[in-house]
Length: 165
Ligand SMILES: NC(=O)c1ccc[n+]([C@@H]2O[C@H](COP(=O)([O-])OP(=O)(O)OC[C@H]3O[C@@H](n4cnc5c(N)ncnc54)[C@H](OP(=O)(O)O)[C@@H]3O)[C@@H](O)[C@H]2O)c1
Image 1 (tube, protein in one colour):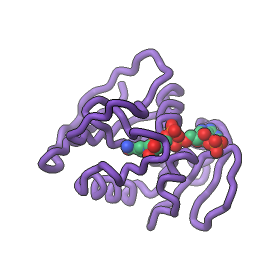
Image 2 (cartoon, rainbow, N blue to C red):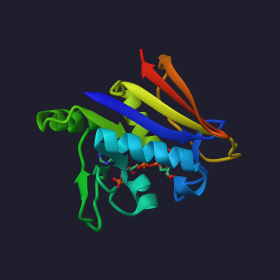
Image 3 (cartoon, rainbow, N blue to C red):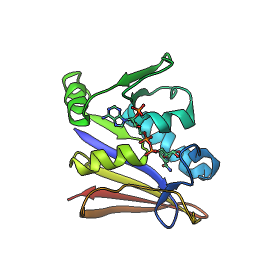
Image 4 (cartoon, rainbow, N blue to C red):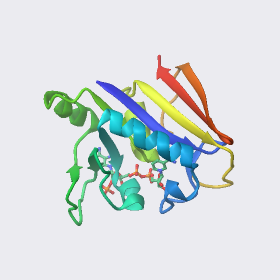
């Protein structure tokens, strides 16, 4: 299974100022375009309930899986899952799915990284700093990566593609 972690980060490695903040508030149009194109190419996006709440709707032309222990309102076009992430990937494999995007947030990125399930990391670095907020990921010792590609997406935006060693 190819598991692509995709995130937009500030230059000091944060993904939001607070849990309610939508990434659309501060990311560039180039990053939004990259996220849209890459997730459509892969076809399946997995995210946590808190991130889904900042989006509030299904993702057009992509399967959206929302992790939650307590789905409240069920929205059409969203698959709600409550299980360990390794089990989720195994289930998707059985359904013939070979590639997924991990779309955040910090809790979900951290779980997939900690469990050694991520194969690729795509980080869009935007030209700003948050003095407080939510880090990309935490709760593991260290993970070594190889830098596969650097792309200047726009005036203030760089995209880094890493593979996990
Ligand atoms: N900049 C970016 O690229 C980017 C991308 C994504 C998100 N974000 C930001 O990240 C923030 C949210 O991140 P977060 O870490 O607070 O939350 P999160 O990872 O989005 O969601 C955490 C929630 O997911 C559910 N969950 C996680 N693993 C599960 C499992 N195995 N089984 C069942 N449920 C599971 C739980 O929901 P329940 O409590 O419902 O059980 C948990 O409370 C927002 O500010 C968002 O804008 C930024």
